[in-house]
Image 1 (cartoon, rainbow, N blue to C red):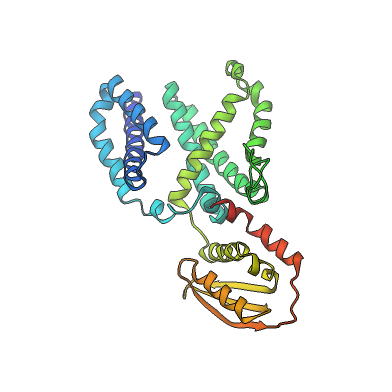
Image 2: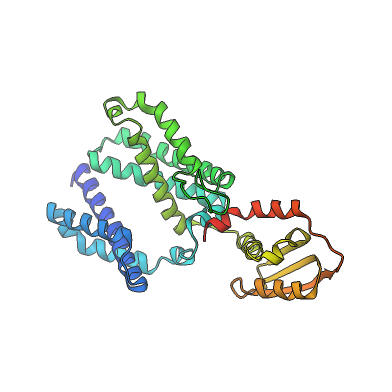
Length: 314
């Protein structure tokens, strides 16, 4: 078998395996929710088109379906973070796992591009693959920091109360950068900035999908942010948030709270709220009661800013 034939065969199997994975995932989600997911229709269309247009795809579909189904069934990484929204997962994932997901997404985009255009030159592959891996990792780390600094879409309020936002800040920066890339696109520059933007959106989507497989999340940090978030949602407790300090002990699954509150009623409300966070245990022995206590609004604002992206994930 020639190098080109081998490349096309591997590309077909990978393409059909990934499509089969999302087909199984979409069907399971449809059964759970009672309505199909948005991606299921397109996956079915692409699968039918591939099988009808290519004898190779028809022959490779059974083994590809087995690979895709087995990957979904044994995909413990995706199951672990399936309940986390994209903003929450991106915010709490470690830098190394974010970089790895970005590199994998860069390779995936490059692989799709080379497959569509039939690029099989080994010298081109040898240069393009490392470049895609490095660039994808850099973009992913930059995306994490930019969205941490600007967690809402432009035009939305900090709690998402003002509607109308369309793009995140990193997407706006990508749009501006795509204007400077036009001279490098040659004949494809006729598409304007839409081609680089389409590539960025495709990469960004794939990066979050890969992150659900390779993410390493600091569980203590996530649980602390969840605790601050539920307190901020209580109008009475939120006023005293600046007087409290929370630590989450991952080994015992316990919140250790220290600080001051004005009444035992507030203390009981705090305990109820924290126990509602994934059934965590709560230690309030270090909280002091002071009826003369006055809330510090500056600390409350600072803590509210700290958990903004957590609220966006709900």
